Image 1 (cartoon, rainbow, N blue to C red):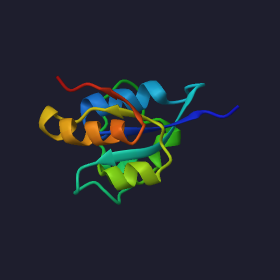
Image 2: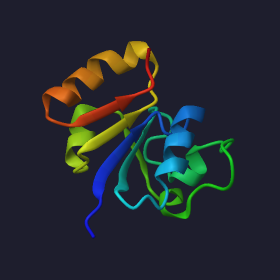
Image 3: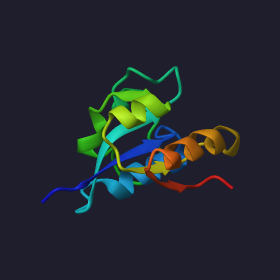
Image 4: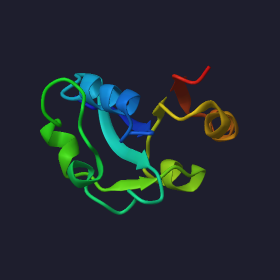
Length: 110
């Protein structure tokens, strides 16, 4: 069965970790892009995150390389759905641009 490709923005923060945990093994979604800050980009997720969410880091996400939170990187990942845990000031312009590109965006920003 083909799952919908998803990206998680702000993936190393607590809310992002919860998105990653809830999407782990989901029958309808597959994480293809974990976005983080410039300091965590290029690092395997298990090394970039200080995991504080319930349970262990999901196996399927642990080895993914954290990528940038950019329109280009997210578009290139093939993601069709974005779960965003970005702070409001960063979320507004990027989430708007992603929606204009036709992606579905679910945000935690106020």
